Image (cartoon, rainbow, N blue to C red):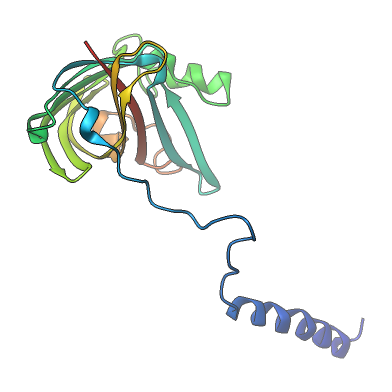
Amino acid sequence: MHMKHLAALASAVALPAAALALQPPPPPAAGRPAPQPPRPVDTSSIRAGSYTLDGAHTQVLFRVEHFGFNSYWGLFGQGSSGTLTLDPAQPGRAQVSITIPIAQVQTTSPQLNQHLQTADFFDAATHPTATFRSTSVQVQGQRARIAGNLTLRGQTRPVVLDARLSGAGANPMNQKATVGFEATAVVKRSEFGINYAVPGVSDDVELRITAAFERN
């Protein structure tokens, strides 16, 4: 093709693309409302006392950057246990402790599931669980910053969870008073001795936690 024709073709493609880039984002599709922030939870049903983690409905997800190509997720959940002490009149005095079995990690690759349990990563044979124990709670409305100590692979480091109350009331299946929370945090895995494939697989690990506790 002649160079003049190539230049004309390039211009024909570039101009619409540039014009499109300058357009504002389209409004939400008809009948599909724009995302809304979470609605406040009715806290009137929260009862003071000791709670036990509902391990069947608690999950800890982690995300890493995979060689700069995409995000990769993993999941802990099965077999988690923990306790919560809560008084809605004094929410800043809440205490929480969670234990997570490392061998129950799940990804989309069975081979990776097994590799994550080796000494390259979590070393589950020597350190079968990870634990988080709170040391202080700062509450603002229905959100809280939960400071505590995360122990993983035999190393203990301070971690702060950004948490929010996500639900409260009686569980319709067993009628137990239940509270739910969601939280996020970012940790550096190298601080826990997990250096394999850094920096190709990111050192920063995003944690997303969803947890439910039932009153004893």
